[in-house]
Amino acid sequence: MLPREAPGGQEAPSARNAPAVTPGKPLPPEMLHGMLQAARASLAQGRYSEAIAAYQAVLKRDPNNVDATTHLALILAVGGGPEHADRALEILDRALTTDPSYLPALLYRGQILYEAKHDVAGAVRSWEKFVALSPPGEDRDRVAKMIREAQTKR
Image (cartoon, rainbow, N blue to C red; front, side):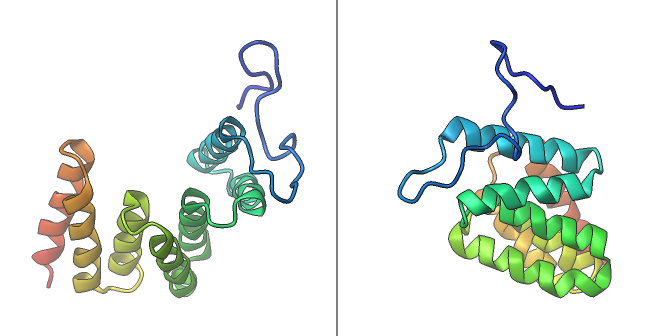
């Protein structure tokens, strides 16, 4: 469960206590970061409606937030089933238009193409971009392995 209080006795940032939208005044970065952390925690724990609400709260304040857009697409793809794959891909393409190097969007786009659309070539292209942009490490190695496995199924 998410903490109700942040260090120092303040309430942890969330969609509920986010500052009101004030035209011309951006959301403080620490508040945005806290809202995204809360949304990610809800998503990781399978609390999709809570995660959706938190990501939507971020997007109300920052309509071009790539993290929130990407993870809403993921929730749609996971929770909506194969019939929602096209819409999830549209949302991911919008996120990648904003930031073509956003690694989670490239990863999830590949997974949706591969698993829901059975588009091996499209998935591999998305994952290859991920590998090209990703620093060396476990994530990059895992996606490189996914590419190799997908290519054997062509």
